[in-house]
Image (cartoon, rainbow, N blue to C red; front, top):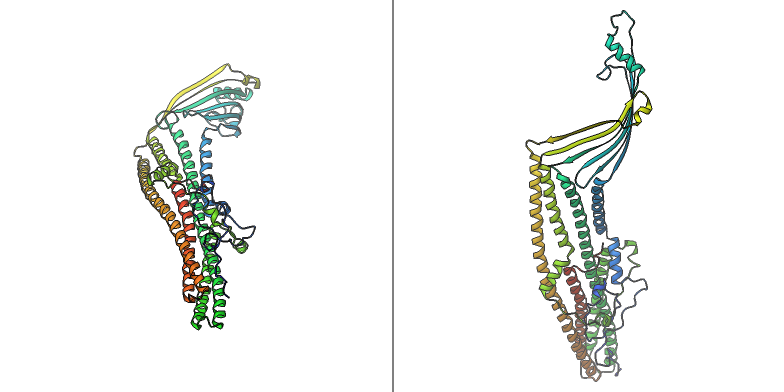
Length: 527
């Protein structure tokens, strides 16, 4: 059995590592965030043609996540409320008609009898940006009266004047028509439309803040999916490393048994190989369980339907692809903080909320003012006993005046104003708190990225050293100058080093994603 090797070395003397296939990064902004290291990987496990890349996971997650869908509905609701607020300036057209009949005397009908009136009109109403309410109206009116005339000499006989009134109305029905305009102009409350404009701006700010919160929620979800994806990457790669280690253990056991039969090894060497193989079998089961758990967590985060879980797999990039690009320069924490202050949608949303609270205070202050409206109207028209008499404009009418309303206590208005001021102070505290959190996150993200890059380099060097050490010990074993115990120990050392390197690679990508999340430029910014 001499000449058989436990691991074939590469040309540079470094044994091959397991290689997974993986997908491109979640967004185009991740494409330049790869680390350049000099370790080659082994062949990746075969993945189904329908496997999901990182971009696929982010895209599907942003489309199917129910919490994100609810945020999108909130955003759509805020937009519709803004549209509804804009309806204040929409013109309104109305038609009205009324026919009335009465046998009861009144001010317009001083004597008993039957009266009928018919009115019809059309009106166009419009609110201007200055708060002026205008109404253009055209109308027509017709009235008729059939008096009840008691017999002559009875007690109910009409007086001469009443009798004359009855005859005039009976035989001379009145027709009238007019066109006119009326207006109402607020002077104190809603002075020249200030309240209307503030209400409209408030609705706009609410819509914009909802859109920014949705954008940040998309970024957070994309970062969570990215983090979970690289956990699956490391777990899958380590599961393959464990399986390869199990194969090496089986090979070592066969060699040990052959050499024991040839008298070159003791029985303890065979037992050592058997024990190592059993231990590695248990370890492989644990690694596969970790891979399955990480994959299921990602599937749930992406919100893949449970019935599709068994048909869903994930594709990964081969390690040289992950490490093919040079690591970008690590930004200073202050530069990352300044970029986050410029870009973060959640910070922009809070600033929109601050302006929204300021507008709310203006609205409440306007509503505390006394209400003084200047009102007026002007009409042109004509009237007569014939219908055509109502078609002219030879008569006119006009009116001007004011309406004044003053609440005596204004308890509710004062309370509402105080609530708005408290809300503004709370929002400003939230802004200061978020700025402090961003500063902390920026420093932590930069340190995490520096540590992750050093971790990858350190584990790469450790893996190369353990691989070389195993290679030399393997050569000694083939020459009969080493024991199974040492080979097993060196194999385990190399396996641990390779697994730590896999975790470091995934950790570097997670650190890069966290930096982008802190900066506010990760996937999902566009709602």
